Image (cartoon, rainbow, N blue to C red; front, side):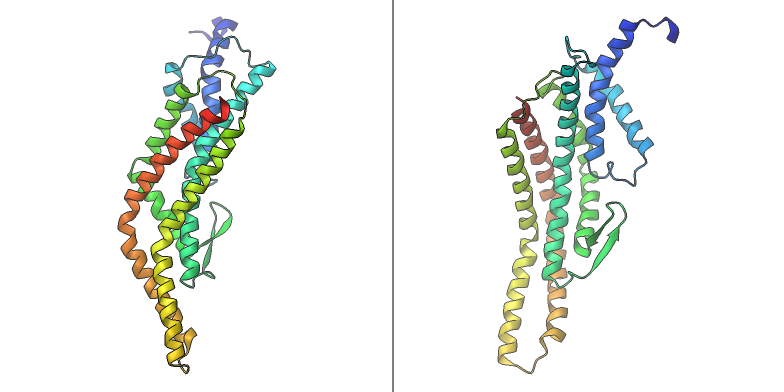
Length: 264
């Protein structure tokens, strides 16, 4: 088809069909973990967004009676950005919770000073937190977590159609806080075996120093707590895949409900 022979109605139809889905998809890619990191080239993220749009958009009913150049059309664009960002941030919170679990464990193990510069996030990451984050990223990919996110994205066009509905109900914000608190509670649960084992170890070291005051607590305590922490971490790792799958699925389900409560 010659580009010059395309009518304005056809151009408007293509814009209506592809622009709004592309906006939602790019918002998800920009806020999602792994693919949304600065180390991924912008061209790759944009190419992925266009590819997903061409796959998903043909099966979506375009919005009706709304001009994208109007104020209502602007609100509709903002709604797509919000929906995509909520999906991306809900997955990002999982990785933040895992990093938090590693940081809590590292502090109790005496590794609070052991931090490495993470060029992907431009911040200093604790040693155990960075290890768990890398491990969780591999588990996330092995469990097809990226495909679950794409499936949740495609399903969001059914649960939240391309219609103006930007109301921002207070109940949705409360649900967002509940989702964040639930994920960080999972972080505490993930680090709980190490925290409990190290608390018992520190109590035992305290009793030992009372029984033998000449014992150098710093010379003995640090290697002991470090060894106990790594041993318990090694025993806890086999439970991480099942925990990761449960958290990923529950987070995506909760984010879908959150979007509906937030907008409708």
